[in-house]
Length: 197
Length: 177
Image (cartoon, rainbow over all chains, first blue to last red; front, side):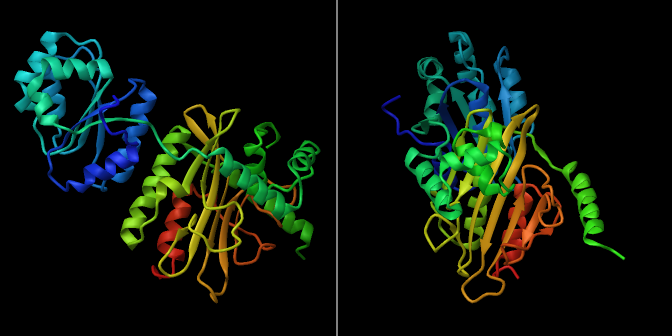
């Protein structure tokens, strides 16, 4: 994993977009196989794609290479994320490798793989590996979480604006003596007091 | 003769109807966050600005299944690079609060503050959704617009955040009109 440049989904998609239309992209995303992560990635991909491009998640657990071909080719112009490569046999990878041409399509093809599945791909499907080339990226999740410093700045700005301390806003909320303005909701949630909203 | 009491009663009825229109978002908080950021990215490209959206759009996962999305500071006091800045000189900041529920997330509240360029009248438009109906819905409707005056709140439908952004980018932005 450390040999590859780590990119967030946002950065990764910006890079892919630089290649332009019809680039026939095959990309390996090295990530946790948890379904939440792929859903977020798919949403990010969809939200950054043009309106004509659809994003489709295709689970391939238990499918043969011919089944995968059918799913990938109908339709063939959307962006497809294949997942479920964990624990597949050497024969599966060899079969997929032989049938690689059947997977060629105008739309982008993402291989959502764990480090182990990536190793299997490289070992048993060298032609697919060559199609992917260097476009192997670890998916590091979604950047943008509020830092502790940024949280404190927001709390400070709210305290200055309303001339109250954190303790005072919580006390007033407990007594149901605050207005319902969205800033107070933000303030209480930043303090971890959703129960007072 | 319509009295303030009558007007309050009508406003209360309106809030009661509108609260049923409040939308559930069919996704997780983080998925909604990337959708909002993707929307802003597309607008950034369309109008030719170049924001560092990974830096200026933030999220915060709280305890109790809450989730917040932020653009810009909580209070719009002065120009800065943490806003979405328009070529016209206008700027946008917002905060959106969500809570996980069955099937996705409910919108708890939001605040979208659009400040027009200097010397524009009104100075700003702010679109708010409250977490709950207020006890005086005439003065503070559930969903409302501040038409450049902090003390004036005109009722509006509880738009989804994307619907609000559509009004910002395709209605309010002076370059659009």
